[in-house]
Structures are given as C-alpha cells and as structure tokens.
Length: 240
Image 1 (cartoon, rainbow, N blue to C red):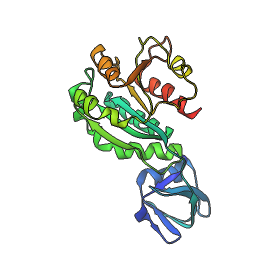
Image 2 (image 1 turned 180 degrees about the horizontal axis):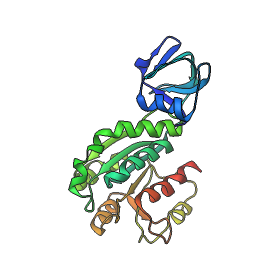
Image 3 (image 1 turned 90 degrees about the vertical axis):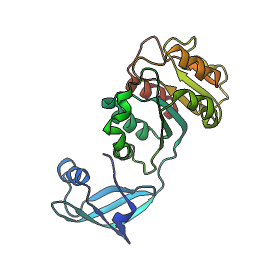
C-alpha cells in the first residue's frame, strides 16, 4: 500500500477522513504514523497528493491540509482478455494488472475454466482487489472490468471492436516469440490487446478462433509458466 485512496465522500474542503479498517490498520501498524505526520493519499477517480494527520481514533483517522495536485499516471493503451482463473489466483492477478496500469480487463470463459469459478464469491470482491492494486501502483483510476461467460460469442461479436492496432494471444507452442513478433515491424506500437489463458492455456479450437479474429499467437520463451507469472512477464513489456 504505497498510498491511501479515499472515496470522494471522505473529503470535505481541505480535510479528509480514513475510516476503512484495513487502511486505518496500515497507517497505525505498518507505517507507524503519528499525529502531525504526512501521508500520501489520493481521491478515487481524481488526483494524488498529501495530507497531514490531525487525529487518530480507534476506527478512523482525521486528515487536514489535503493537497491533491498530482495527476495520476496514464493508463496503458491495453486490453487484457484473461480466461477466468482459479479463484485463489484471481485476487493477485487483478491486483497486478491494476498496479501495472491496464486500462481494460475482460474475464472470459474458456474450455479449461471450471464452471464453479463463475460462482466464486471472489467475483463480488473485484472492487476490493482493484483498490489494492491502485494503492500498490499509486494510481486513482480503476480499470474497466467486464465478465464474458460465453467464449465464442465474445470472440465473434465483440473482440475486434476492442483492438485499436494489433492483438496477440499467448500460446506456449506458437511458432514465433513475442520478441520476434515485435521485430517484424519496429515502427508499430505495442499490441492494444493481449489474450492470456488460465492454467493449462487455451485449447487448439480457442487459439484458432482467436487467430481467425486477428490475434497473432506468440510465446514468451521455452518455459511454460503459471498464469500469474505469464501475465507479469507479458505486461512488463508495456512498462519498458
């Protein structure tokens, strides 16, 4: 948590209040902050800045001298289409993609996505995971997250409208690497859409359908990685 993000309703003139239990605990027990200390804060959907601790209560922290003059970092021009992963890795993936600055996230069904994943209570907590990612990446603008429970209709009817230049699909058995794909034309910008499978990857039918709708299959090396590792390796290219 590299900054404390607060909703608009927690601000009044040049004051603000922290009343989220996790945030209060972080300020008290992780930062060890005291009255008079300055905190890095931000307004959800707004700017970043600082504020000074005026008072610390058991369940809230009052701030004054709120200064919000720093524009949040620009979002990556990137949509990630991610096959819905196992619930226990969903939180980390949403946090990481948010911290990296992904603009749009599409959670889509795939052959290897178990039906039970769509009933996971963690899907009701996406906003919570996004907040964690924003506070990690020092950002205030949440990515847009959509759920697509039907793979084929999504690819055939919606996918191409999300692509502004190029699109790729991560596939460990692709003929070319992401690096080789980039070298084909170094004047082109990075792809605006990347598709990443869940554990076990995409099946051949899914790769073929994605390729038929403009997604070039690429691999990221000879090693087959877990989904969370593959996401970070792929998306790290947009930060270089």
